[in-house]
Image 1 (cartoon, rainbow, N blue to C red):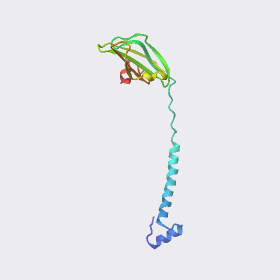
Image 2: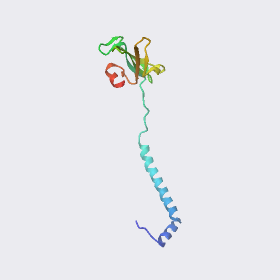
Image 3: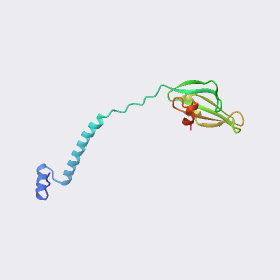
Image 4: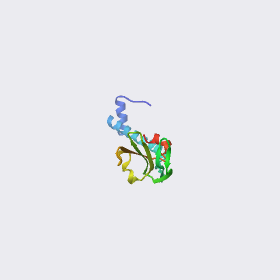
Length: 149
């Protein structure tokens, strides 16, 4: 490729219908944009469109009506199902002398207002702490330490 300088260059540009350097730069810039849009358009259209996230229809939770860390589930070990968008929950009931029991269950979307709250218990000297999680069996004893901290 040869570049012309001086009067020959201006005659060459005039022959192309380009009268100024700014118009030449504008034309080159426009040409580059058109080429980029053609090349990138083909690359982007060749990619797969993003797939929508498919959520499961139900969330599976561990259910136990009375559990201790030492003895495990003492009453009502089971599995419960709740609709997608709901949660699994474990309610901890404690006192200052070391008493600690748990209740695990499903929690519907409408009942999730008590997730992750500490409240005094109706029984003097006790308090309750509830914690929700959102994947299958996240509240069972094996997964509780990972999912509820």
